[in-house]
Image 1 (tube, rainbow, N blue to C red):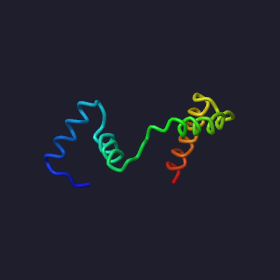
Image 2 (image 1 turned 180 degrees about the horizontal axis):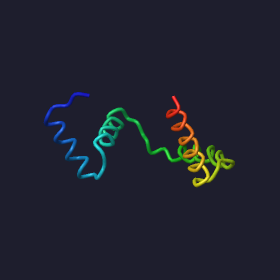
Image 3 (image 1 turned 60 degrees about the horizontal axis):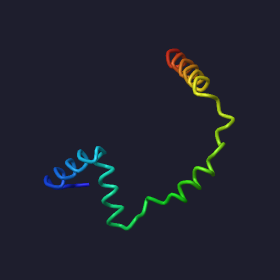
Image 4 (image 1 turned 120 degrees about the vertical axis):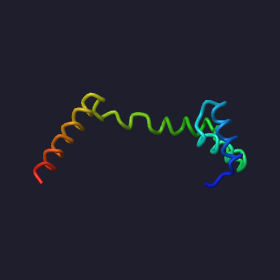
Length: 82
């Protein structure tokens, strides 16, 4: 996206004042201009309800991390052997 110097300046200022990123400011401006209402709590709650329990059989963080690190060690060893 190409912006004028003045647009960049004002975008940076608005982001700084809002304590957010320039990308978030751009998304908000586009949502307003396009009439997109992101504040749909019912849809968000429905998505949360649908996702609840999906990962119940997944390993806990320490287990998962140990598995990932073990896999990386094997891959590094394989690369060293090549």
